[in-house]
Amino acid sequence: MAQQILNLVFFSLLFLTTMTLTRGLSKKCRVTVVPTTPLVTFLERVQETALDTFGEKNFDAKLYVDLSLKLNLSKTEKAFDGLPRSGENGTVSVKDLKEFIATYFDDAGDDLLYYDPVDFVPEPEGFLLKVKNPEVRAWALEVHALWKNLSRKVADGVREQPELHTLLPLPEAVVVPGSRFIEVYYWDSYWVIRGLLASKMYETAKAIVTNLIFLVDTYGYVLNGSRAYYTNRSQPPLLSAMVYEIYNRTFDVELVRKALPAMLKEHAFWNSEIHKVTIQDAQGCNHNLSRYYAMWNKPRPESSTKDKESASKFLSDSEKQQFYHDIASAAESGWDFSTRWMRNTSEFTTLSTTSILPVDLNVYILKMELDIAFLANVLGNKATMESFLEAAKARKNAINSVFWNGKKGQWFDYRLTNGTICKESETWQACNQNQNVYASNFIPLWIDLFHSDAALVKNVMGSFQSSGLIHVAGIATSLINSGQQWDFPNGWAPLQHMIVEGLLRSGLKEARSLAEDIAVRWIKTNYVGYKKTGAIHEKYDVQKCGEPGGGGEYIPQTGFGWSNGVTLAFLEEFGWPEDRNIGC
Image 1: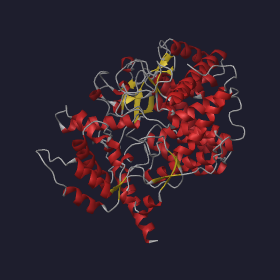
Image 2: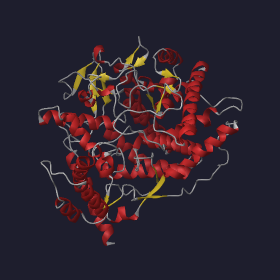
Image 3: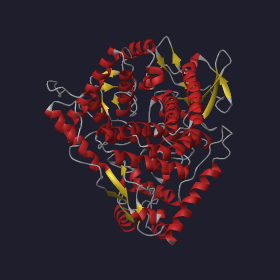
């Protein structure tokens, strides 16, 4: 009982600190900072020392902030400060640092235990009935089996002594993306759930939602991931979409009842003063839209050494803080990193995420509004339903007024005018649309309010087909080869899925044909890559069938939650005829 009280005090203090620091949000220019824990601050020091000692080769900064303590922080810090150091930089020897880490830390991931999902069976009844090709069916069952490999349960020690861990004590079992990503991630979870639904693993899908509701109840929003160093930012908001999809399979009204308060709280978060920007159109009408805006202006703990290196070219502290704010906000977008967020597409340090209104974020919030209206109606809450239908109508108008470009047949991100991002509103200017081609320009098709308009779909489809984004192995993220992972030539599972599903749901015969063609390309690249490497990858090179993607801050990862989910969702939707070739 005493331990439970201590835990409650620990998380109450963290929550109260967060709430206190986010009260003054009406001042748009002030970067609100939600602090991490003392353990995270200390682990950043260990991370920096490890880079100096071990060197850059195979160095992964995230590894060090995922370590958990064997002893309390004060003893560990004292031992760290007592390590022998040499040279001007005070370098610790390889031997001493390895011994220190082995003595005082458990390995990253040791506080997550492998878990056998209660609803996993090797071949679920009614699994992928449209897949007739035996070779593809056998492979699909191997992908299905990966859910067991990626299922974890938070160890009891995390709840009993949370101050020793950066991992957060989630109440239910989790599905992790894979490789270095050994915790829950927010937007990944939507496509994990889509795959779990294809695998008939409804209880595991509901457990993921329960964990995300816990995060909203504890912090006021769903975190980027379930780590203490992610408490200052969220990720693309898809909680309502997860509940909607699960309800449509299970008709679980109790899940809806449990989730609705969290969804309302999340909607308020994404429409709070830090995120909301008002744009006045040429007719004088005001439109409210949202942007990414992390509550952080320091190096990201999971990439602290890299962020400091990038920021070293700035001379003033204020410039560095703005850069750290923008880099954390880009991480909140899920697109970490891309030329979408740069003023100069060839210079990473020109990130200006907080001065950009993104098409896709506003589409996710529009979907949230439509989902809340639908789910409130399920519960008989007519007033909430009507309120959110009105909100959705206003946001659809805002998306069309600010982002839509009829000549190009795309929706473009909107860049706020320099010097006005702190004002309550600004007047729309056509030249502020970012007319570079990104897959996100076509994400509105995912939403019924857009894909139900046949003339609009035909216009957008023509633009999409001539955009240069469609390649032999799927949809490229952009046309710019910047070396960043959310740019050319990488393709990502969620982008394939949203665009394909939007085309499919339009009901147009030619749109369905294009959707299936893209899905087939994507399934093939996943299959060939799996046969070559024995793994499903986080991202793929869309120029080369079966080749994993690259670029960015870390080496390519395998596992992989959302890639598995989209593969299974595509196979469930389109099937695979017996006579269709699966090779490249």
